[in-house]
Image 1 (cartoon, rainbow, N blue to C red):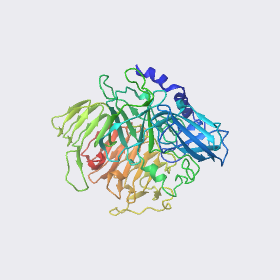
Image 2 (image 1 turned 45 degrees about the horizontal axis):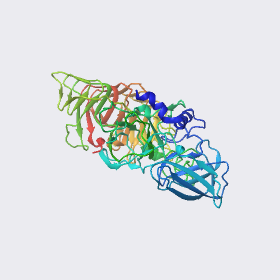
Image 3 (image 1 turned 135 degrees about the horizontal axis):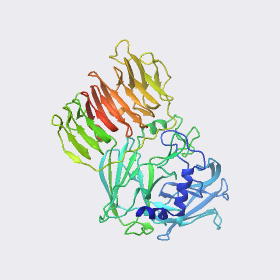
Image 4 (image 1 turned 30 degrees about the vertical axis):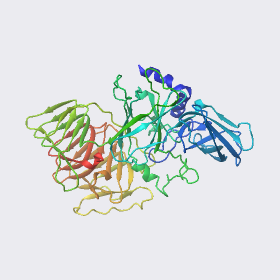
Length: 559
């Protein structure tokens, strides 16, 4: 019912914004993790929603480079106005990559809501630029989301409402680099909305839930709105999955190709567009009692926020989890510490435990099939189905193609750009004579079409200096006496993200020791053959068998 009204609530300007960004009138931003987004549209003002202290850019053919202008912001709610001054500069426009005269000014402190903007050349009375209050909104200051997972509130929070009734909430995610699930709710403000009613912009005007895929087509972001309670005095709940951003920060480090240009923070040193992923503006075209909210400032409410890890349980199977053959899950704190009953298992479907398998922890699923000779030590809960974030492969990371480590393959060390020359890998301590080895040197992220480790071979992950992340677009196969060995056994420092529906097979033996996390929500994942698997594992249909022991690293919860 609300979906049909959502389209009209966005209004002409917002609809045009989404349309232009999806079509992509200019070339896509092509840079590091997350910067490969369709550019913002060409406009007179950008962004058209932002907060006090943030820069806003005005464009007009009448602007004269080097001349000073007075820019007056007038609140439509109170009539208060504030004037700031700036000098016209000639820079590239993010929208179309064309050098243009532009006026960049900080937004002054004004009441939240619609505001008109008038720019006049210093000493003149006639306006050179006039922006109506329907085309610009002053948003609240960003709420800083902590890097630590948990629940917290912002009491007395007030959101902004634009001329078209769209509600704006701003967030600062500077402190979060790990993948997380973010949930927010307005307590005491019964705003009703669906996932069709939500978009994320940033402080530059980019539409943030669009990412350009490998085929050049925009990929939508991941918003989920669980079923609402129409009688509740609180708003509906927004759930949003955010990708890992270690890759993003590594590629934007000082002197790296995607470092930000100090003369213009909208661009990288290599000439590609820079996208600010830290300062986000959430726009919700919701309803209050079947009507759009009034423009201006919302009544005060408590903003309730919950963040939790993408790796919140030890074993996750989107469609099912099956354990057999004395497979085991438990938890641990540090290497060598006693096991804990935290080997939790989750599925949107059935959780099946057979053949002396055991879950040392809680199980959540749509149903349970636990044999007499199997066990679940903790609770069994019929849970609410969850959606799982689609993997988006960063652009600009080293492409290793098919990464095959088996007898007869070359011994090399792969490093991220500007982190050392490629050369022969060094055998890790404890390696056995005759084993073939391939080394990945961190910190860095790598793209792989297929990953195969077989025979008397080792993929050595040198994550001693920083995390290593593998993005796999095909299948993953570790079999026979093949193994993956890491320098640092902290599972947070080695991650495998599978951006396909191809199978993942981890075949182990009694001597296997794996430390890392796997996220493959579309793949069938098999962990079999025995061994010790430290970290967390997410698959579609996930199967653990053959005395495979999965030890969940409790620090992944962020507690």
